[in-house]
Amino acid sequence: MAPRLHIEVNQQSDRNPTSPDYERVNIASSSHVITDGHLDGNVIIFMPGNETASSSQQYLVEVTFEGHLSAAINLNISTQLLRLAKNITLLRASDVRELSQQSTTNTSSRTILHPFHFNIPPNRQLFYNSNDLILRGQGRIEYFLKARLFDHGNCIAENEAPVTFAPARECSPPICISDFPGEYTLASSRRVRDRLHRRDLYYLSVQTGEPAPLYLGRSTMVSTVVPLKWNYRCLAPSQQHANVPDIYATIQTSLRATTFVSVSPQDRIPLEEDANKLLDFKLVANTTGTSLTQARKLRIASWENLDGGGPHGKDQTTTTYQAITPLILNFDARDYLPPTFTHPYISRRYSLSISVSVDVDNSRHASLRLRVPVQVSYEWDEWPTECREDVSFRPDSGILPPYIK
Image (cartoon, rainbow, N blue to C red):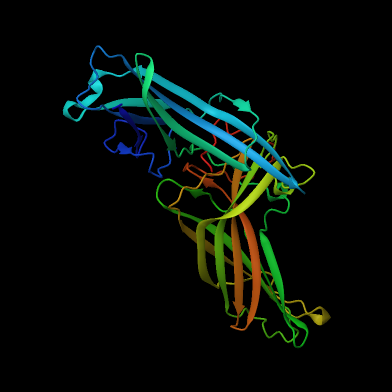
């Protein structure tokens, strides 16, 4: 019976491998995300029968950490299916060492621990080995560990385990909305009419901006605050609603992910308006929902008189009132969520879809919709407040892209 191998990785609560909180995790079944600058673990070797690693046997253990990216685009034209694809090796690091007798933890159990360690610096020259292939339409980035046991140059056992790898990185500045035409809606307004008498009753608007990022990895709960700025103005000549009535808003919020896949390297941050074009089908974008949703009901109060105006002559100029309410979002992110990232072949960014149903005086309703950019990150750091100046492509300082599938 041949030896068996099992791979496990160490999960740490801090970056000190000697910490008592250094915890062992089975990476094949755990959803733990590796974000640190190093990857540590053990290859567990189970020897059959009474066989142990003696001095006469020359056992070698090879542990490999690899990352691969694949991007493919399918174009179905009539009866012809055109497929374009790209495969890239992002990273390949190997550790080959002799199996030490000191690694035996319990001779009676015939189990040997062989530790491994890989440094993953945030800045490095990445190894790229590309090859065009014909694949099904997909975009994915995968990492895995592979261990092999050699006896006199012959591989006698091997095993492989996936790694959920999402490098921690500093959050980018807020984006300039004008650089992403048609993608985001930061303001929405409605004129509510009395259809029976064919007259306007009031004007209501809401506007917002990019909130602070959603920081993952510290707990399953993630949160951010979306500031909502409301404007109200009565339009009825009777001034029935000159003073702000009771206004309630039912708000449905969901986090949506947009993934860009290309088979040719992009020289700028991809835009939705450039994707999914039949004349240039080398870039596709797909927006999907995530499991992070929330429904809340707000009472909009504390209105401020902006101009102090009122009815004036024939113009019927009316007062505009403004209120600011924070929309607190709390999501239970139990499933893995790739962070926001940009790569020449695969990129992902997120947005909050906000659907607002407004109830005025329990009778008149208005529906408003917003789409707000938000970043997702595994690094808790100070967030820049100045917006990004351009959308030219800037690699993330040589940081590897995260696992995505």
